[in-house]
Length: 188
Length: 208
Image (tube, rainbow over all chains, first blue to last red; front, side):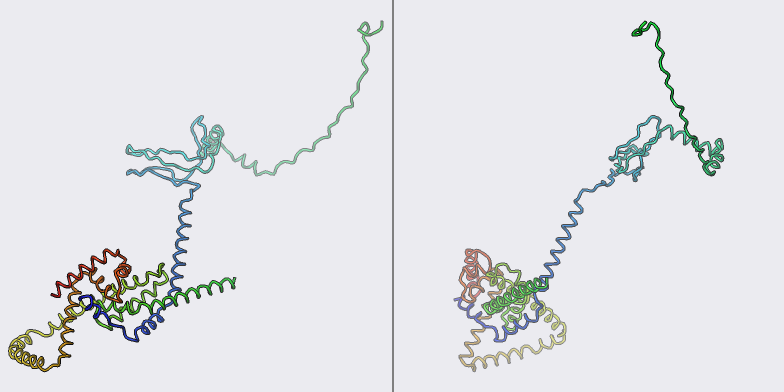
């Protein structure tokens, strides 16, 4: 009984112009394909860009970044790679190209460990040469060494080389060996 | 290269044309259903047409993304129902605002004037009403009675919870059976049966 009443109440048809109105309204809509394709292409581009970015970011780097343990106190650390030149007597020079650790003591008790990449090999200099050069530099500064003459001599033109004299080789004369009487094989 | 582009463009146009044709056939097939679903909520022909039209426009915009086209009816019905509910809610809010504004405009003076005149007016209107009831024809009387009963019926349907309401409305549109209502609502048939049972029982109670 109730269902019949509801059915009768809902038995209403739309006006004859309803379908035409809907068609007109839909015709006024922009093409769904155009913006949908553009939307899809934009999404595909964004996806491709993110994949490329992720690949670049995840690729291992040749030079590892400097990593430092955070400390509240300011740490003294060398941030740029420098040639490992040791000035200590008899010290063997470090020639390894790999990263090494530098400990920087701080006013506080904490120690900061900084890994420094050293892409270039260390320069090898003999300690005696270095010491001699330093003594020479100090002597010039103090006035103990006068390099004026050396500077002036360098300014002169190089001397002409002396002409090479012809080498005279004396002719070889070989005298015959006189037989010794009584020697073996010598007829008496 | 140009030939390849032309072929791709032609295939896209063909796909679009096929989609247009398919949507047109769906539109013809389901236009009355969408209208009646909206009418079941709004009970106003023009409003129901507006809402059904809006639902078709939304369906057209998203038709390409609908993977299973066989579910178009269910998709459209649910979309139309939601749009109609939103429309009615907005209408009621607007009516409430207008009523409040009218009450403010009416003012206290007119209220006191109406209170002074009410006994006489009530007497005269009741006299006129009895004269009118006595004078109307039986056909008009039946029509008025049917209208009154329909209003009570819709008031009872409106009082139902939404899940029960949509089940009873869909079951009485286009002679849908339980299986079809279950497909439209995307719920098991047993759920539809229990909802219909509860809806009928509540309606009987409300219309008693």
